Image: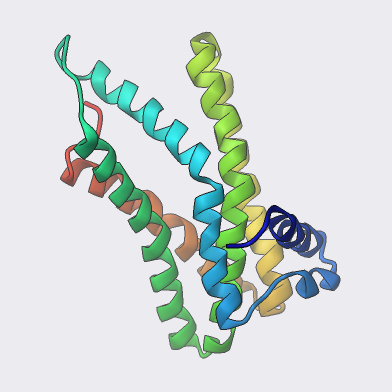
Length: 198
């Protein structure tokens, strides 16, 4: 498991790449081992995931009859949705890389996508806390979530540009495949597994 110092090192690399500084490439491990280790980002993001699950549970119970409750199975199903949201986009990106002939860049994309989820997850947690603690500021939280979504798209685009070069169409495609399928899959799985509020 990477140490906190190593995680800080990786995030520094992402920040440098976001600023279009090629020195950031030296901070990230794009080897097979580095790609596998980047999945530890899910562990470091665990506090944000658990908070999201608790918030989602609250939304779900509001749509249920009074006195209803949910058990461990509910959280297990949410966990399945979370895993699918993490893995499926990467599989699809792998297919895209193979089809357009940039398979050698796949591990780099995996490393970038995985470690980038960490700061984004904690940023979204701030939005979630606003919604949970100050319901009167829901409008502000929604606005912030849109701002964060735009920031994520911009960050992915700028960082991927440092790895994939100035191939705008390829960068746009990879960015879209990393983000859009997860949004669609998330709601579909939540409804299928009966963990969707309403």
